[in-house]
Image (cartoon, helix red, strand yellow):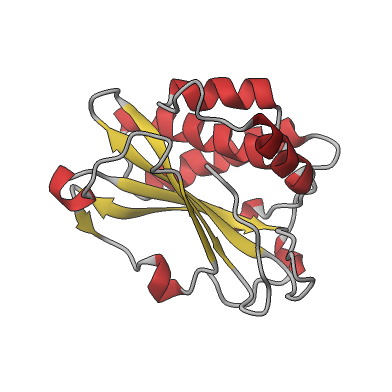
Length: 200
């Protein structure tokens, strides 16, 4: 998917209805997750977790998004409101590409099942492991990690680069809480660009 991420992939503007776009993206994610083999017991929560992260990215609302993050294990005091609101303003209304949304199982039962971000050439990898609960070693913990990714208009802080980047929202399955936990957000994009991270 990474090749030729031109602006024509951005088929959905979010400037006049971010939450409507999130709902449409959730439908796409549900279908893609089924195709990726996500079991039915975990499917609804994956769609909910992805929807929460996408809403926080393109239609940020601190109170709503903070409550969702805390419900997934972020400590109550683990959010920097000023930073989150600045990030929301930076990304609000960005166009996305629903037609190219995909779900990939990156790790199943502790075993890698897909190319790593390094092999695919990501530009920015923003981890949340200092905030959310996360096993020290994913392989030893035998967890599943899933990435939902789609093209998005991510601004380049150096003014270079072109078209869209892929934004990948990664989650790991926590048996203890029976839910998907935000894990990492990855931006795969133009090597000429300098992207700011999208924090889970």
